[in-house]
Image (cartoon, rainbow, N blue to C red):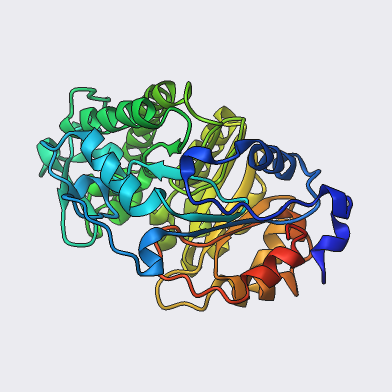
Amino acid sequence: MNIAMTAESPAMRRKPCAVQSFSSFDWTPVETDWERWWDGTLGRPLVWFMNPLTARGKRISHPLPNHRFTSHHDFSIPARDILLSYEAWNLRHADYYGDAFPWWWANFGPGVLAAFIGGEGRNNDHSVWFYPGRFEGKALRDIHFSLDKESPWFRRIEEFLKAAVDLWGGAVQVGTTDLGGMLDVLSSFRPGTDLLMDLYDCPEEVKRLTWEIHQAWWEAHEHFDRIIAPANHGYTAWTPLLSRQSFYMLQCDFAYMISPEMFVEFVKPELAASCKRLERAFYHLDGCGQIPHVPHLCSIPELAGIQWIPGEGQPPASEWPDLLNEIVMSGKRLQVYCKADEALEILSFIKKPESVAFVKRPWDGTFDEENLDELLVECGIL
């Protein structure tokens, strides 16, 4: 199916956005097309593909390394210096295709909220993990959460967001940090199987702490949003979707391990409440263990869309046609990470292609996209 045939007219199509300098990026057509996708008038899928500098085999000289996790830089290094490193490694000569745009987010690990409410963050070689900190060994009834804005991790993220606004001033869309899902954050304080047992042994305490985390989550989220909003072109989270209205990628990776009945009891009420506070809420559906929760997710009226991540060792997104069609036919939007050939495969079976956003993982260091032009033509962009 040629999606270009469903676009308004050839005159409405635009060339792919390919720039050599993010500072000269033309934001107007990108902002317009993202808004039209959200309101259902674009008539085609979105395509977010970026070819980073490092993927093209170029070499740069910079004193700081290129870390995927912002937290991996020592906290004593000024945030501005690290952002200039990111600019040199990832922004300065990148090519942006379709609906992609220059973007950076404060990557301090999924569920960093745990470090703002009494937990402890630790980096390892490839990720960030969070531990009980001052609540080590405490029973649930003795744990009480509140946001600590003096936490070193909170202050460090705040420093980065302020530095990004000051340095780039709108040339780069700044995404906020990955605060995490409520039970994901709680699991940092109740590791292993402890939280699973808590669902049976003390469900009311789990619910109490979930809502305490919810309160701290929203205080942190709104605090960070106030910093970046004046310079941003809208809202972006840890995945590069762009919205002029409030947007965030909500999640509960812990839900992989629980039944749909438990999802309804322990996850859905808080999730629905957060969806009501956002104008365009997305849910991060990570792994096949979460597929049984899709009907309950789709029943939340205020949930705008679902991001599907098959998970490690699973077939790519293009090999889940029933699931993808279930999502879009429910009226939700869909975002998948994929390569160009996988996106073309999805277009061959998806029933509402105009509801889909195809995103090439920005942190993927390869860019062998021989089918990209075909995808851009198929989507009415080129």
